[in-house]
Image (cartoon, rainbow, N blue to C red; front, top):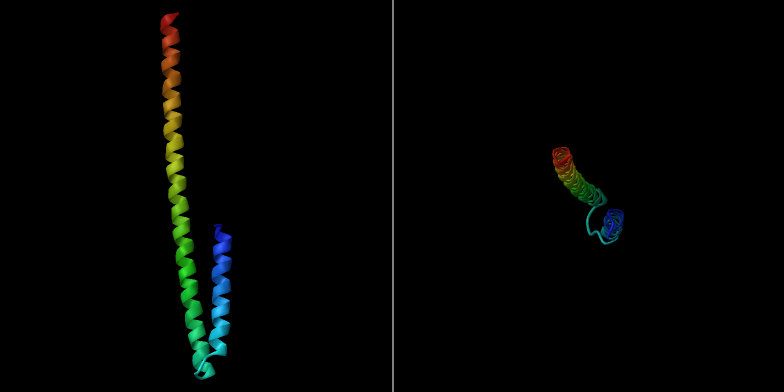
Length: 91
C-alpha cells in the first residue's frame, strides 16, 4: 500500500469522524469544537511523528546503501589491482 493511500485514508477517517461527532454531540457547540480541535491536533501530531519516522528510516536505508556501494567499489578496486599485479608479474 502506498503512503499516499494511507494518508488519504487517515484524512478521510478524520473528516468522517468529525462530521459524525458534530451530528451526534450531546454537548454545547463550544465544547464540541474544542474536542474537534484537540482531536485534530492529536491526528496532526501522529502524522508528524509518522512522517519523521519515515524520514529517519529512509535516511538510514540510504546511508546503508551508500556504505554497501562504497564497500563494493573498494572490493572491485582491490580485485582490479590484484589482476593488474598478476598480469605484470606474469609478463
